[in-house]
Length: 346
Image 1 (cartoon, rainbow, N blue to C red):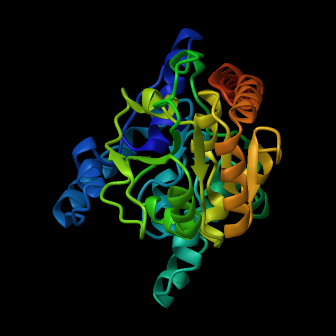
Image 2: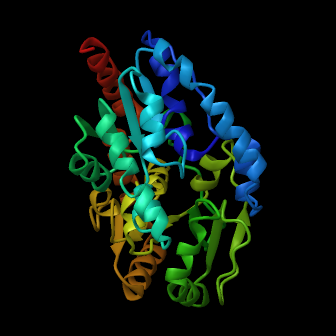
């Protein structure tokens, strides 16, 4: 199951069930397909065709539900007119979006994709009774697209999985800079390679990467570990500092800062690029530092490396912020009320 599905949908299902909401899920791709992608294997056209045909078979039964909870789109890379026809007469749609997927289309280098697909996501938003968006950039796009109702709903953690342990995070005298993600986001680390290289030479510093796959950073020897759902909290808890570098392109404006929230849930200070949703999550100098340029990254990381007390204070501040804003204890009741309001008005 992809991260979007796991965090934006599946982690809410037990809460919804406990409050009388029955759900059925229908993933487009299975776990083996996603595992192959993360392993760097090419997409299998036969597997994709099979997945699309299976989803097409769902169309006749959509009308038996009260609400359709749609993750982004029904059929990636298929024009809007086709999905609009399938959804004609369907129950109210709650469309969820946590990436700037519309930029796959409207900023494509292929002119035919731009012509055929640029307005697809906007069209689906316009059809929906509600769009739940992971950050303000996505919410703004939905409003400009004519969505009838838009709610900003951040991607959050279940704090039951993130207990405060107070565990020692590394060997004495060694500071661990950590990153968690996937092979598709690991290249962002190259944007701060000079800072990581300098600090590795100057200090007793480990760089730990979780889920990056094979990753080479010139002059730095990271320790690389696979990502698993069972181990991710323990891995992040082993960090002393969590990092989230980003490139500065329109695509990154759709990122929702989930790894920042994971770091803070584990009471770790954060250093993140001063861009996109990061700006709305972190107060610079409180939960961590926002860095704009290599010198900012060097300065922020060096300050945290040298000051254990600052790491502790910032980590505690981040944990409080997660408890107040970025956990399912806050967002699950909001989501339930949104569903109830849509159901009662139709």
